[in-house]
Image (cartoon, rainbow, N blue to C red; front, side, top):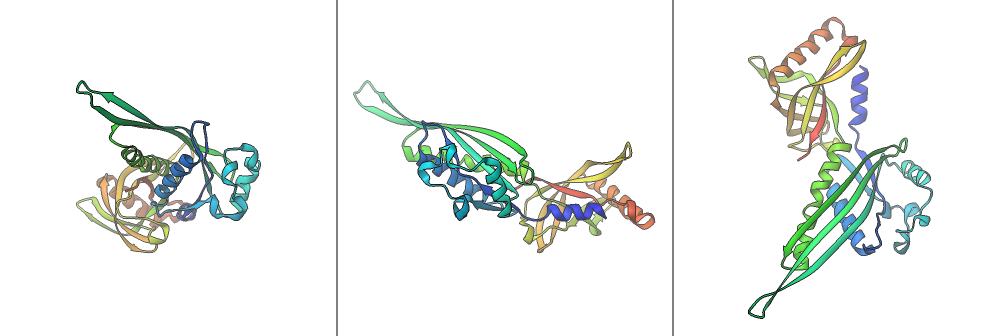
Length: 282
């Protein structure tokens, strides 16, 4: 069926190139690279995407002292096209608008002083589709941390917030899609308890990933998809197979599966498998 072929295409690992970040004049090159490195590490924690630093590709390297100079780069369209030829599906661009640590000194009545540090960071992340140059998303993140006892504590607290930003970007832009296999599922009293999806280790699926379950509905002579429930990956069975528990909508998923099975028996050409689309990652 056409829908199966489409889903299998989506199941391939998506290759994401991370471009050099630019920054405001108040932000140093070193701080920019530090933030960028932390974000790359966070992106690499998601095994269903393949993250590539442009600095690892000889044809894309730009000298450190020229990375904040727009004239140092190729025409953006040409540069993205070069990444696409190297295998990129998406490009991540970043701009650091602010990063500063403020030292505060509070003088007490006994003549002693207390030193604390406040920190703030603001940055923008863009995700671009290499295939057509479309801007998929633009996200602006701002974090602060106050009354820290040291610069190290400032940096430590701020760095812990970056992975949450990356999770938001990944969840929104780099989804996993597949189908529920209707040939083998566990049910009881008209409710699906467990089922299999044809994604596994090779696709970077991990335990705890939550998927939305959708069924096909024909409206105005076209197929639309409505959510009937949620499942969560319980275990990875094979390179292309995962066992899932039903998190929500066990009865609706059961009805939808039975409908698919019945249609496949009478008119298989019109049958549409239940699709699953990632909703959140662990």
